[in-house]
Length: 276
Image (cartoon, rainbow, N blue to C red; front, side, top):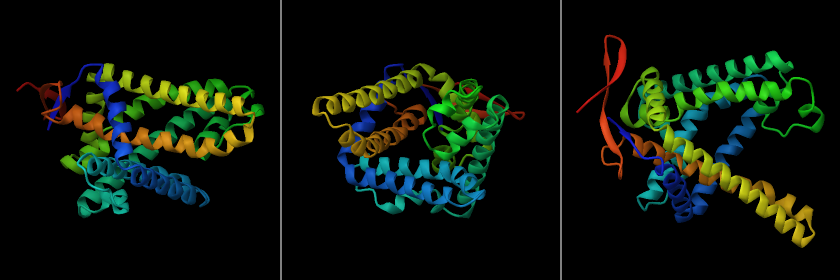
């Protein structure tokens, strides 16, 4: 397993590849994402344990969508069973993915607990409930502080877990080591990751502005409201489709115009990049 350094412009290419691959198999990719969202919605209805269980399964679901993207990228039709790819590679692999999910749930709930110190948990309830906050909630004392604190501490969590599911599944890396490798890859490729994030933010922003403009021209806000949720989910499907390419280029030895800088190795309990 080699770590590659890619140029910042690769971030924009990842977005383009995600969109292009999505439109190769739009029904399959959108269907798999909607299945995932439906599963999360059903789980969230279970009192107390539902949210925690959906968080534990998130890395496995992310891997499933990445596996589906790889199938589509190779010209094959991704079947619904791809969504549970993380649990089709044997007991050890399944156990490792579950442990990774437990670690993710613990990390995210810790971040939400920290944010709750500033607003008595209002932001955490909105975030974990996946609902839109009311104007009264947003204007409540401490909500915006909790939001920024939560987002600031969530960024390192994202970096730790971004590549981890794929490393555990495709490279049989232990959950703990996968976190280090993921963090290293994200940091060493921070330019590309920042361009990737900024490009997607711009895509969602212009997409929303476009829908609002169409609604204003048609004079039918209700029509735009009706199509807004499916349209946003469609964009989110493209976003998740692009995940696979960030992993492929950061860890594959033949990654486009990236530079392979060496192997990630362990020495005396510490991890380092060994030059080839």
